[in-house]
Image (cartoon, rainbow, N blue to C red; front, side, top):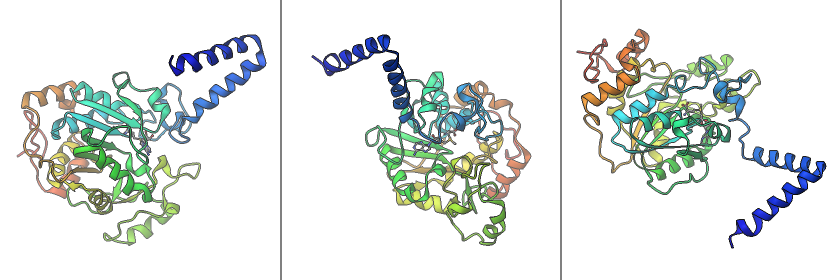
Length: 347
Ligand SMILES: C[S@@+](CC[C@H](N)C(=O)[O-])C[C@H]1O[C@@H](n2cnc3c(N)ncnc32)[C@H](O)[C@@H]1O
């Protein structure tokens, strides 16, 4: 006999019958069930954090422009496209996947994508195409997969949510997960060797901006907790706890055993501009030392053209400001996107 047959089923039956007979017991069971369910939920990353995504509009919606947490607003198609187009990977893990929009989009592109997040709320409301492929996982503890389970790991707008002191441990866990590559977007400040730099605005409290700007390019952070930009309730905005420079983040990844792939970032930046993402995403790409350096295209010109059309990227008109920032950082760069050369970067 199994434990379920021996123990769970009789206890459940007794509770059911008792709750049917005695209203007071029913109330106790109801409260107990609710509290047990609540125990699984994170305090911050719950309904109010994500705004409209779960259907209920919340007062403290995450501010991502539209206050709606959707596949479009999170730029999940664009993120999935970058992973699919530029990384030589078939199996991927999206850490901080929230509702699984990136996982859903990657799966539509034929990748074997999974996701983990600490938000039980987001996982309970996962996108249809991600259901069954996303699960609870906390980067601060052991993720529920074996060593080297994925060829690629993505972390879109997630690492800044960890306190600085746990970042080394979290990145060691990312390293444990992958045999190949990591793509991450992390709000960062200061100069960037491989693309447009970052800034302090909306990361640091307004009254401390002058101080941080005066520290010059050598200052790497992380910004002191008391100086982090706050929301209306006085908490760090959107749960951003680690605000640091490109140099600081790069060194954290290197210490965890990664090598930054600046050449690949340089190839991707013109596409970020073309897709209107330069102003939103500070890009990092890493590989483990023994993974092959990424060269050439991972997909054929016709596959790329098909996906560009399917996601509507072929209709995009780049923001001139984005283009100017990428050009200022990298010089004149050819967008190697076939078969539609159309931006000022095209030579
Ligand atoms: C700003 S959201 C980004 C979600 C998604 N990647 C995107 O770009 O739209 C940050 C996500 O990180 C998740 N998160 C925060 N701390 C985490 C941790 N320790 N482990 C895993 N996920 C975490 C949150 O629950 C939240 O869904």
